[in-house]
Length: 577
Image 1 (cartoon, rainbow, N blue to C red):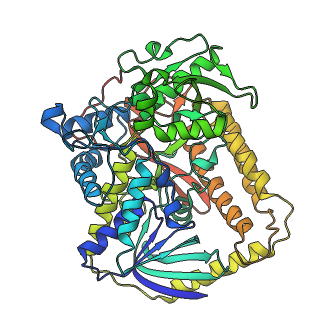
Image 2: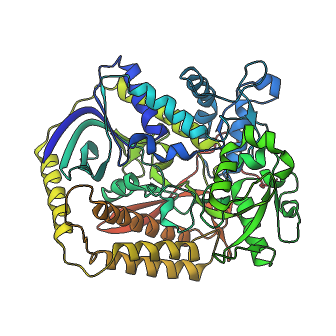
Image 3: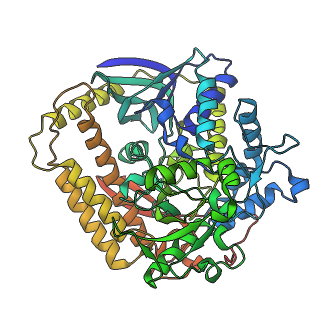
């Protein structure tokens, strides 16, 4: 077993992880050694797939906008489940992050006065989404990655798959990881740790997320007894390309695109007459699902999938080429359709996980209802701070990544970080190395890929846009059965070099744990709120359910408890658009 030691170990190299590394470096004047661990090449992290933009109030007085209004829109969009102190941090700090990215070289779309353009996004009262065409995530990642590679104190471990989070008494000790290039096992010690591994959209068959979005860091924390929060809230993006699920950015509707059913109707007038296509994502996804139930969808001849049409033809070729070039490229390459001449087939798909590792307002991982780790943070999509509550507004995710990346990096730099070389931590790493070796040696009968396929199909069938009690009960039974079969799964590739079979199996194990927690929490919440829509309980119930669900592994079994939502100035009201 190889060992390395750093002051800070960051698992995940998307926007949140890179931003934390940059801030810790700047704040410490480069004196802290930092490890960035990615199971991919860092620049292939899922953040590069973000398209539409990043939210923040840049020109408040002129646009009649304010940080308070941004906070209100976010809280209302969350169906009042967001913790309002966290939302305040988002609104206050997001503008500075956008301007920092401008200084780092992000090529924002700008107006004739060289001011950053901002487009409308769903649920936002005022256009406050800054954008770089429809490739915002890629440009943000490029700027950050190019910046962090200039610092000698930062080492990037590309293509290292983390298998265990090593904790001792609630404090971070390090990460166990497999170097995929040669199969070697490493124990990377650290004085402080950050989990920034994104969401777990790949638990679903139809998803906009990358193949790498398997919730690895969230699952590792869960197995170490760290609480997860609000796992039932999975966002379904209303406009994923049919049949492949590739994201068609909300910016398409922000620029003026329409949704139409098979009758040619702009059906959103029946669901959100004031916002139409720019209602929050949960509302638009439910509207599309309802249109399908009413027989108003189109049907894809090759896959049999239902869809509605996204019409951007009226925008014209010039505007599409300037503002939505990637949408055009994706649609033309995938389907051979020119969106300036034909409508785009779209349907809801799993997109973002509002739930994740339970954290404090500053991103510290919570060990239980009151205790937090002083040396472990969870940031970005995997950290439930909770700034999105029951439904995230589009373009708030990139703001969240940068804001809490900065907060975590700043906090780590100000602490007196010391690596603790304990025998207990080393023994835990040795035990993990032995576990992985036994997985490779196991003579099982089950295919990990068949298990994954059945899991993904089950989640789409029973834990999707609309949920029913009996379906959720069935899902719990099915996933439980898959978890049992996984214990008898065989790794057919016994080699060391780029053993993607082993990597896939470890990812599938993570997805199973998180899918089970999601479904269990969904069955427990007897109301409809945001992205969680229960057919038997169609209304929001503030009297009984204005609270976060907490799931924690205890004696090998998940246990659910609840915590109150932090209300600070914005009392819950009826959510109309």
